[in-house]
Amino acid sequence: MHDSEEEEMTGNRKKEHLDICLNEDVSAEHNYWDDVKLIHRALPEVDMEEIDTSTIIFGKQLAAPIIISAMTGGYREAESINKNLAEAAGELGIGMGVGSQRQAIEDSSLESTYSVVKDFDIPLVIANLGAPQFIPQGEKDPFTVEDARRAMEMIDADILAIHLNFLQEVVQPEGDMKARGCLEEIQKLARFLPIIVKETGAGISRGTAMVLRTSKIKGLDVGGLGGTSFSAVEHFRAKNEKNSGKERLGRTFWNWGVPTPVSLMVANIGLPMIATGGIRNGLDAARALSLGASSAGMASKLLPFAKESSQAVVEELRLIISEVKAAMFLTGSKTIRELEEANCVVVGGTAEWISGLEMR
Ligand SMILES: Cc1cc2nc3c(=O)[nH]c(=O)nc-3n(C[C@H](O)[C@H](O)[C@H](O)COP(=O)(O)O)c2cc1C
Image 1 (tube, protein in one colour):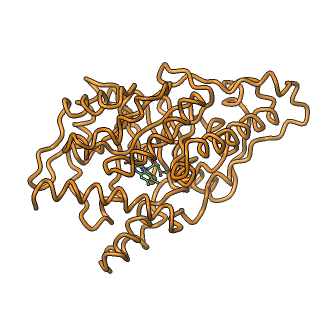
Image 2 (tube, rainbow, N blue to C red):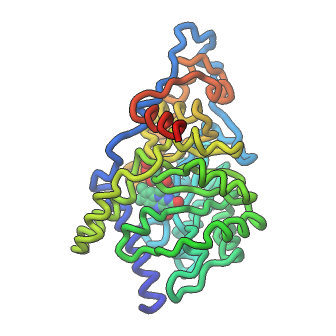
Image 3 (cartoon, rainbow, N blue to C red):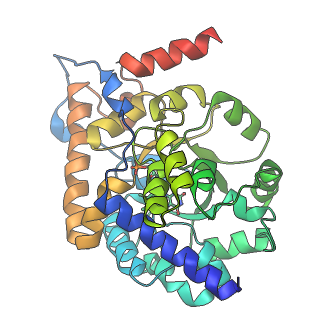
């Protein structure tokens, strides 16, 4: 296959992912945030107007602990989606990541589909590339530290997320299945650039977090199970392509991974953690903070608004931030630091996960 054909295919793939997420139910069977209960404080001893949702992560001040997670870029229609998300992130003073910048590294004519975010004053901008692209896959040359630097410069990023998506790769009909050497590449990148490691829906276990601690990474996006399942997304792609083997694999592994709240509890190695995976509203975000996250990341729930307009994204995010505030009020937390210390109990399947892990 020619390089240009492969680039076009990757662009189409990003579009197919987005369309599938908009039109099919690709959520994991169980949303584990329902198992995390913040304890109600009947005497909050704080006034709503005193509550301050601002926080600092990676040295950047956000007006609320919310980050729009990596989703798109690399094909023409993605530009307006990234613009709508970026305009909202700038207006509200929250963080934003773009989708994998692989296509623009391979074809600079696609840069604007990502660099549109530079038109807005966003306090934390996160670049994105996949770990599998840093090791040889077939005939392609792997990305280098210079390519990673280019991805950051393309969008004036503050930090670069290296995503881990081997669940998706294994189900994807044309997936990259070489994984040996990724850790060494992450260690190398982290010596030169500010890096976070981000899972994309299957979570980070304690073992993986401990291994990553050997690098100079700045943080983790635990990207756990409970929200968008990329096994489900690829199941639908395989179905459209009449690839029955991959369609079945995607169905079988639909609920594979470490739930996001569990991942937050076990992958805490003293680095800032972003909690992505299944965050539906501001209450879920508050729950994540009480379990050790520094911010909550949201992807698919914002997609329909991002398709519509920047104003629709702003309105939805305002509601989400007001839910964070309500949770802070009801737990008597005047600041995000106090919310992080708020008590919660973990019940149901999530509690079983934790006790199962403790027994091992
Ligand atoms: C349409 C779509 C495309 C995505 N593309 C990327 C990507 O390019 N890079 C990445 O790191 N994560 C990507 N993700 C994963 C999200 O950033 C996030 O980790 C995941 O969807 C779980 O969050 P959610 O449950 O809020 O959707 C994508 C998610 C969606 C819905």
